[in-house]
Each structure stands twice: as C-alpha cells, then as structure tokens.
Image 1 (spheres, rainbow, N blue to C red):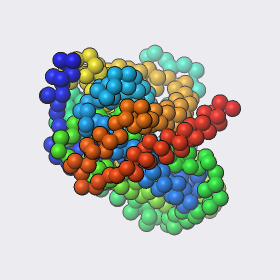
Image 2 (image 1 turned 90 degrees about the vertical axis):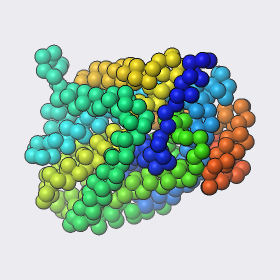
Image 3 (image 1 turned 180 degrees about the horizontal axis):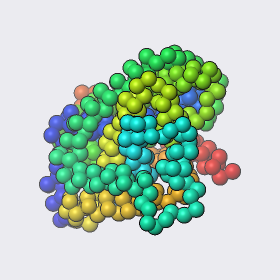
Length: 461
Ligand code: PFF
C-alpha cells in the first residue's frame, strides 16, 4: 500500500552497528537478568543449571534471534507488516507477538517504578526493619480495605515518571530517542553493575553464597521442568519471539553484519545474567552469615520478593548499605528502562505502519493507552495477585507458542528458509549454514512443542 511504502522510504536507521548492538543489548538486559535469572538458576539445579541454560542458548536462543533479525532486516518493518510482506495471513502472528509485548509492558513498567522508589528509599533506608510489611503494606498497600480516592497511592508517582520518560524517548524516535538513551545508559549500567558485583564479592560470607549458587545438583538434569525453565529464561532474556527484535532489526541499515551483532548481543546478555547470579548470591552469602545460618535456609530468593523484601533487609545490615542500594536499584531502573522502550517501540511502530499514523502520533497514542492501563491496574491492590498468572501465561506459554508458530510458518509453510539464510549471509562474516534452518525448523519446534505441552498440562491440572 502507499502508506507502507512511504513509511519504509523514510525509515529511520541506527547510525552505526554499535548503535544497533547497544540498543539490542539494552532490550535484552533487564529485569529478567537481574531478578529473574538468579532465582531460576538456584531453584533449578544451581551450577548444573548452566548446562541446560547454555544448550538452550545455543540450540534455540541464538538461532531464533537470527530468525527475528532476518525477518526484520529483510522485510524492513515491525512484526505485523514484516510478516504480512511474507504472506498476508502471517500478519496475525505479528499482532499476537505485539499483544504479548503489550501485556508485558503493563507490568514491567510497574516493577521499574518500584525500583525507582526503592532507589530513593536507599538514601535513608526508608524501608525500616520489617521490609515485608513496608513493601506490601506501606508501599503497595495490599490488603488496604480500599484505596481512598483522595490519596494518591505511592506507586503512582514513579509510574507516571516512567511513562512520561518512555513517551518522550519514543516521540524523539529511533535515532534521537532510543539509540541515544542506550548509548548513554548501557555503558552507565555496565559500570554501575560492575561496581555492584565487586562490592558484593568483597562482603564477608560472599564465598558461601557462591558455593550455594554454583554447587551443582546433577539430578536436576533429568527433570524436564529444569530444561523448560532454561528455555523460557533464554527467550524472555533475549527478548526473542516478541516481535521486538524484528522491529529493531528493521531499523538497521541494509548493509549490516547481522549475525556477528547477534553473537555480541547474546554473549553480552548471558554475561550480565551470570554475573547477576554471582552478585546476588554473594550478597545472600553475607546475609546468611549475619544471621548465622546458611543460604539454603534463607527464604524469599525469587521474583519481587528477592529485590523488594530480601535485598532491602540485607542492605540495612551492610556497612555503606545506602550506596549498595542505590547501585542495585539503579541497575534495575537502567536495565528495565532500556527494555521497556524496546517493547513500546515495537508496539508503536506496528500501529504506525498499520494505520498510516505519523511516528509521533503513534508514539503518543500507544504510550498513553499503555500508561493508563498500567496506572489503573497497578494503583489497585488486586493487581499484584494477577501479576504472577499473567506472567505465567505470557512468558511461558504465549512466547513459546509464538516461537513455534513463527518457525513452522516461516520455514515450513512459507518456505522462506533459503531466502532468509541467503539474506543473512550476504553481508555477515559469521556465515550460517543449513544447520541453522535445522535448529530453527526441526529441533526447536519439536523441543518447544514438548515444552509447551508440559507447561499447559502443569498449569491446568
Ligand atoms: N529481555 C528483557 C529482560 O530480560 O528483562 C525483557 C523483555 C524485553 C522481554 C523485551 C520481552 C521484550 F520484548
């Protein structure tokens, strides 16, 4: 159509490969690395988890990342239009991916907002002695009979700030907005994160934490749930099959070495993730030592509890805890923000291309709708309870389904394997072979299909 060809003629681009790589790392490194990975690894075999994790990275993570890149870069549009350019009905899959991203953005923003508050609370350790009561009671007001209409819940202010920032970045666009934020935030995040990990490793008791984290439980390797956890973690962490990497790749200049960039992004993401595990468990080792117990006896080592209840308690006991708290919550804010702008860019670009809107109009429309939903849901207390269910369905089931459908549709039904392979190989120095198509179109769908079956079964039973 004329609108879509006009849009692609004027398409913005990242100004360099570094710009693209930093933005893609920004999308990948986020809350998933810092608070999701350490707990998942610990619960699924500790040191032994690194085996399924690396297998998942090499057999599905990187191959599907390349598939996302190939689709976006070859067809030069956000997910729905890119897939529509392959075959009209495939557009539906693109919208499915965009809907998933949208759902994730609604709660992801809330967690960034909590981190922003806690960054500020670190100055004077405002959470006091009972960090659990502070988080759910005083801060989130869970269980309050009703939110009075005259009192603005504490979370509303940081949440509005996050959404205003997202809106401003999207209105500025790909080059002046998204790329610029990542060029500043990713180096800043790296330095902050390095300081955090070094500090954690120098705490008394750190080595006990590392032992608890890395001591392998080999029997975990025979448990299918452990392998499922590894694949889910890789997908969420690399932001693949959400339509987001399709969108990012569509803004890359035509002559670009996509596969080498992909390897850099995947390697950087996993390095952050494993280092986050080391930093978090070193800190927990310190906590266990203070309480004269062992890390295995500690509770609250996953999800929001780890970051917003357990960590504040440790921080209060630490010499220089304020600085540590600012480093930790600062990392969550920086990593989370560079991820949420990728999600919203994917949604906004899709809406822009579908309805022929201007880039700014699409950015404003999408951010305002998502912000309103996020505020409506997360200023009430019941949302916290829904978070887990939504997360389960979107991250584990939705995303695996999306990856299988994409691989089968693009390679088997539409037979685009050779085209995409040739496309990636024209410029890239890391050349792919038929093994890539084999991994994407045979191994991944078989394995992921089994995984999906297991997931749905355990959730329904
Ligand atoms: N990869 C991000 C993280 O690990 O926190 C989360 C994420 C970003 C998921 C973008 C999905 C997405 F499209």
